[in-house]
Amino acid sequence: MTKAQRLLTFLQSGSTATPKQIKGMFGIANPSAVVHKLRNEGHCIYANPSKLKSGAAVTRYRLGTPSKAMVAQAAKFGFFGA
Image (tube, rainbow, N blue to C red; front, side, top):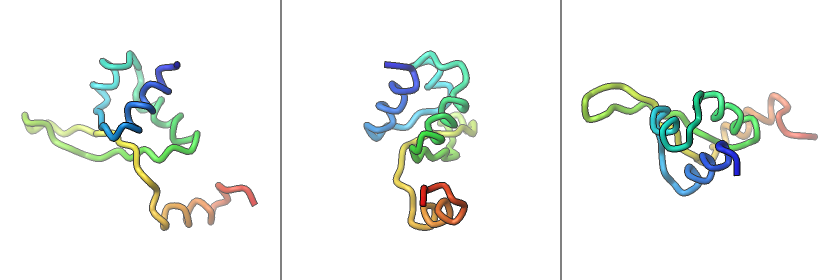
């Protein structure tokens, strides 16, 4: 199982992770690149702004379901085969 697959499985469990957590848990040097790759494979991964207890701003990645508007927009630009 690749690092990207392990991350996807983790997100599919309903968990969220910051880039720092992804680096530590999965050994992924560039979390945003792996998230981009997973998105290109068709997985709906959201990047939600969040704050730590210390007040520092971070991004938390989570797997979600695309809204009807997102699917319609993708169809409009030809992301689905006709």
